[in-house]
Amino acid sequence: MELSVTQFITLDGVYQAPGGPQEDSSDGFTHGGWSAPYDDDAFGEFMVSVFEKVDAFIFGRKTYEIFNSYWPEHNDPANPIAGKLNSLPKYVPTATLDTAEWPGTELLHGDLVKEVTELKSRPGRELQVHGSGELAQSLLANGLVDTLHVLTFPVILGSGKRFFVDGAEPAGLALTQTHGTSTGVVISSYRKVGPPTYGNFEAE
Image (cartoon, rainbow, N blue to C red; front, side, top):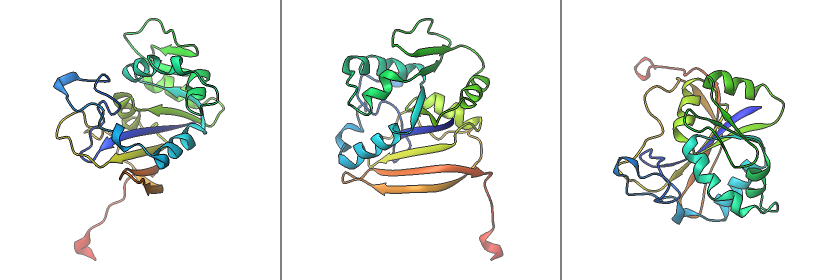
């Protein structure tokens, strides 16, 4: 399987608590729910298109707990997102969880790189990460991400956890698609193509 990451960020790179204040108020963050006003048909269609490719999920602990509190109670097999989340395998790298109630969940307690590399070696289309910012950062830093979907929302918060931080593996990316929604969200998808390339404008 290939590994894809779908991440919501603000213009200043914040990924913390996009869906609501209850998601993550750590470090005094007061801007939770910043993505909610920007929902529209184009946003929904893109998310459905991503979920159409999934064969398994991998979540960070916080995102897993947020999803687990909502999606099992909205288990409509006809819903293209709920149906996949409730029926497909879900993996959670964690050092703090010992049990998981959401059916189809497997907790991973070993080395992250080895565990994810083994999952990627299994047959299937995509192993998907949604949200799970710290996990996604670790996967990027270790060169395990094949496709990166970045949804940039037209809002600046000035505080909060940033997605692109020091420590990511240098990588050259190819833009495979981009479009905007009616509410101003810019959806861009990238694939890793190798190391960065460099030049010098003064030499031209």
